[in-house]
Image 1 (tube, rainbow, N blue to C red):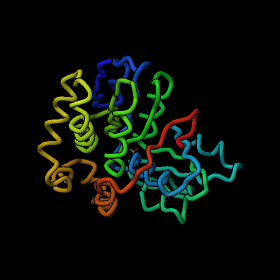
Image 2: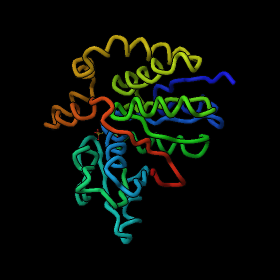
Image 3: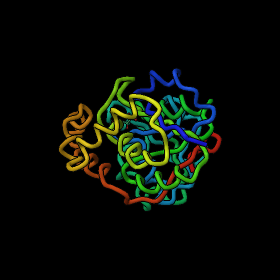
Length: 234
Ligand code: 3SL
């Protein structure tokens, strides 16, 4: 079967795609999906993505770590937010984390009801993810979490990296995948400089967390491919 690869540039467009036979790769490079990949790589038992801050609290009596971020900052009263440096083995190994973020966990919740399967992508697991996708007999939709339903550079550049790696195996089924692949060609020789132009990089700089941006742009430091099983990423 010829498999298709498509790119959904923002969560606002997800309703336009039939994903019932597709693997949906959720992408929020800065920082949700990078932190999720790193947390699972570091032995977190599972990560439960929830859309609303208040939903975290319903897990409060289960001994889980509660992580909440809004607009780049840790929500006061929670164990931590969305920085990859909070997802080290020391902090998350053997633990379950309940996580809500501004865009990433919302995109996950949108994909969950209809997708054949939902997995997590980041530069940290790029090669492992692409090799795995090649072995699956499914179409692929790359879902960019964006920023508050708007397009963003970093998620689209990553989508383009995946499309570029899979173009010999999959058909590019929409113009968004062509555009993403071309954007990646522009960005790939200096990802840091290119993504440094993004609005979220500027937001991170204003919050003095540029080290998180550098961390999230590392290539292939992880093998983990978090998969959604029920409500849990494992
Ligand atoms: O929007 C999200 O899901 C977050 O990744 C945003 S932030 O990087 O934590 O600001």
